[in-house]
Amino acid sequence: MRCVRQARLARHMLEEILLSDGGDYEMRVTIVTKIIGSFAALAFALTGAVANAAFIIDDFNVTTFAEASDTTGDFFGVTAPGSPSTEGTLMEGATGWSRRLYAEGTVAVEPVRTQDCPTCQAGRVISGAGAGTIPSSIHTFVWEGPSIDLIGYDTLLFDWSGDSASQGMTARVTFNDDKGDADSSIIALNADALLTSYSVTLPDLSGTGGAGYADITRIELRLDGRATGNGVQPGGYNGNIDNVRLAAATVPEPATAALLGLGIAGIGYQRGRKLKG
Image 1: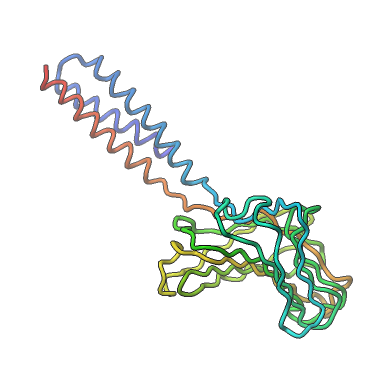
Image 2 (image 1 turned 90 degrees about the horizontal axis):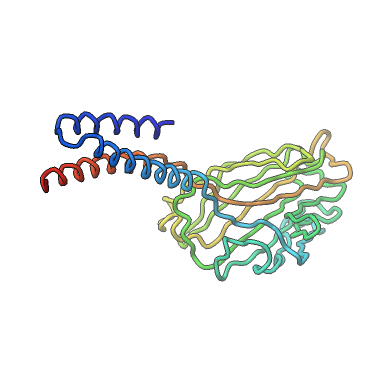
């Protein structure tokens, strides 16, 4: 609506100028109106593209099962390769990037598992019965590869669904560049059988000494399982994570600038025609 108002204002201003200049008014109004209308539509399209653009980190549309499983409870955890990078969409197809999985149980229990799950078409987290300390289990999805430019994004989003025992789990994202890393704030995840979207504001990388999001080499999404009630997770818990992606900042100003520039260009064009006549 803001762009529409600006387009109308620009038209009225041009009409006043054209009236004061005399000449073939109707023809010039028609030309200027078409110019403003065409570029207003273009500005809308450009603004929408910026506002809605998304960068897919992992859509988990894999066909190969992969799992990291830990039963030790020794706080060291287990790392395992994820599904091949050629499966699904990984980092928008960037060359050299790969998936890794990490699982850690803080007490010796039935397996704490982190999976790339083909049948779920999601990343899956599972903790066996008896996981009762806080945090009782840690699941981390890791994506790493050659440096990639992610400037222009300000939010990480993912979809989550979990059973009732997963109530109280938390999520945190870490980004690494070539000089250091930065952790986001921790967000709480609700138990919900349906996929629910969560968003995490990207942490500030300016203090790492690198070029910020221009040189990202690693992204981690960590889920912490936490005890509920009396400190015991009856039967353990399970949940699915899906569609990990980055959202671009909404920047409406290109449309404003485009309309202003086009208004000026229209004036210049009309004045040029007058001088030639």
